[in-house]
Length: 319
Image (cartoon, rainbow, N blue to C red):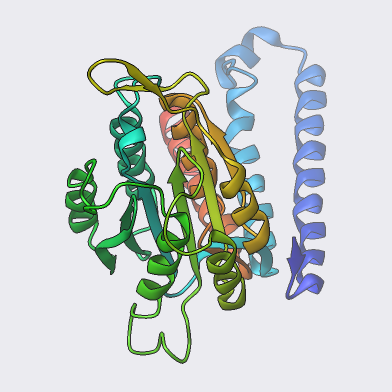
């Protein structure tokens, strides 16, 4: 924390002087009580009061004064604020392997539930888009601040929604980048601060090379956070026998490293929610130094109200 007017903090010396004066006055009062030898008469003219209660209003008042002085010195601090035009693209794998039940009730359903929580926890100012991919990629929801539209898009995520089987990680990244370029009229010349959060359970099997798409994302300054979702024991039923679909995060790790994003692994619904929560706490924000004097002034006013309430309740007068 720093101060725009640090010289004003010298006023705290005045608060310290008030405290010293109060302590001196209390000590004199105690000495007077000791010199007053007629204790029976003293009880009548100065009935006993709870010792600690009579100090509360004064203590609250002095604390209030100290807080107001600090606020008057115009303190500043680093504050995390949402970045203007921040855009997040959520890309979800809807290939057949996402029907594996190694994650209850299945990988795709768990991914949809976690995506809803993730989107719901983002600041309202963020633009959020949704991409579904399997053997190809489709933009289901263009980046928008309307969370109801994004939620409806997540509800539509289903195996086969893209029409082609496979896992096209490169296509998902490319489609996400294209959607970012259409966020608003400024986007072609002034791209918004953006990030792609991509979830899959397997290696790339179709479409463009993930490395080439990651290079495009790197050039555009768009980090791609990737989530490898599933376990090595995943299988899907094909009728006569179960087909193994173990999770494979090699391509996802490489994409994250190449674009400056983060690579995550999740083997359960709870782990996936934790991953999304971690990502959500770090994207779309910037740190700014702002005036935070209102914090101290507000706290000082609260203490002033408490001092007045305590004095009225216990002594029927204002401090």
